[in-house]
Image (cartoon, rainbow, N blue to C red; front, side, top):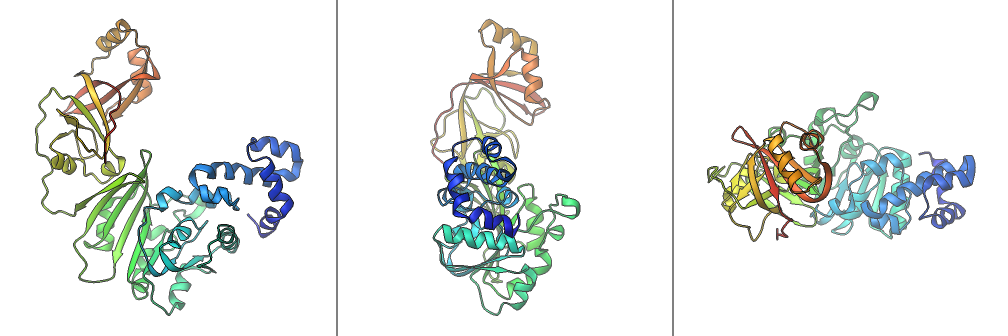
Length: 395
């Protein structure tokens, strides 16, 4: 997006046009307005997407550059960053969703953005959102940290994970800014550093890079891992490190880093009455067996299903009753489904060698419907579990 395009979107006529067609398909708006309607149609498209991802931005009819929108946290995920104090520095502002969230719990926020157009858009949006305690600074993270003379309560950074040729990168040393190299200088200016990593980032690598006293938050939303947050304390006497599994809006679980909690407490001894599907944040952290040990059930693996004889009162994930559990034998299962008149099934799978499409073909069914099956590998053998309706469970 250019400054000229921002000017165009801020015109009252443009804003009223987008508002008028807010429930229309963007392509129709582009056709109605001809060649000059592409920009407004794109703004309409991303405002419609913002209804669920960024509802505050939608209500305020904020300016939404496509790339910045795609890279931004959702407001629901941003709300899980529970830090507070006098001053927060967001070194990588972007669209400003995290800065806007921090403005609620910090007296003052400095939002640093190296791209001049994005910095301008962020400032415009903060004004539209009615936020007055954020100062937007158009600067690089490296230069800002070098020149900053105060002390912040938090420095937050979400490095850009794109390299040469727009190639995706995941190692911090390849991201911009290079937080690993910049960390010593940052620590001199703040009491706390929080770094956002790719959802694919390895947890063990975080402890290797930043030390054994960090806290790693793995944040999921609606069954998908969204963020890995690395909280790096500046105090040398900070508590031992930990990992926190967070389901946005639903709760969290904390595990000490190597605190001696058993990795498994029960052997595989069917039959079982319930399939427990751990939240993806637990699976990402490879903590499923430690969680299973806490609640007294069997865990298939560190990132797979759990099995229980009783329905737990609380479970960090989903719970299904098991109607039948048997070895995966496609021909027999296909015959049984046909005899029962079942032609559609929801297919769940973890650590199973075949994808859902191949399973459906082997069973002669289509995906969907009211019935559910889960497929997994347990101690080297393939199993099929016919499930009942999901049981609501507290987290």
